[in-house]
Length: 254
Image (tube, rainbow, N blue to C red; front, side):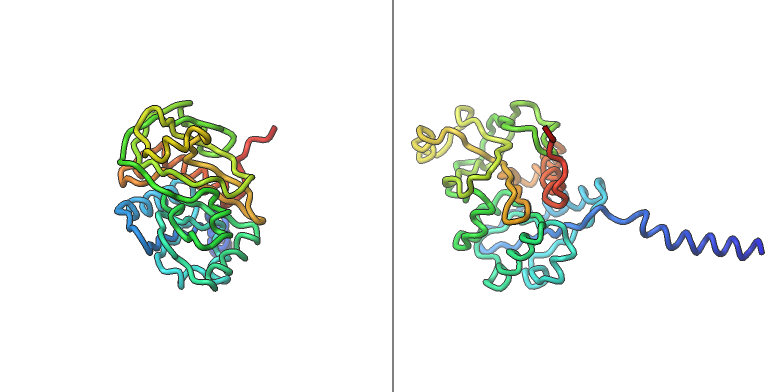
């Protein structure tokens, strides 16, 4: 009788353990490049995998859209990260699949050159919010926190130094954008075109989010340099975007 009780408890433990240790959610990382290929992609994937270990979520990585952009595969993931993607990454069928996915209440995270992706897909460009136009040389500049009402923002100083390839964007494509970070153009040398534009549009945003078409979209322009993915302030910022995109949680309630 004693041995059978021990066996029953052991069997029960095997049944309970997978439930007790289930991951919070799963995130797909997509890094196809049909244009410029960033050398920091591997560091970005490694950083997100480490965030998965730290914050207990699964990470699936692929550069092949045929593996990911199918209804059955996408349904496994709470959010998709476009990590340093460029150019025309998806065909028409895959685009339609991703639109269905977001409309089901799922999340999108764009990192850096996700804004240099799919210019001819209006649904995507509105979700992204601003599209990349140009950038000056890599420089150090002062970044300003525009809002802390978002997960991952609490560790930033009100103003802080960062070194980046400071993307310059076109006009907003969505009235729902909520800005998180901007760069102070008086602390570095923007392009001549941007200096002219700044007279009418002074804010130079570099991170924002919005509810979008039933789902959620977060973007950060940081992440050009490989070493950025070793910066705990940046990776915490990135996790905040992933967490919100995947769950819809973390916004401060009034």
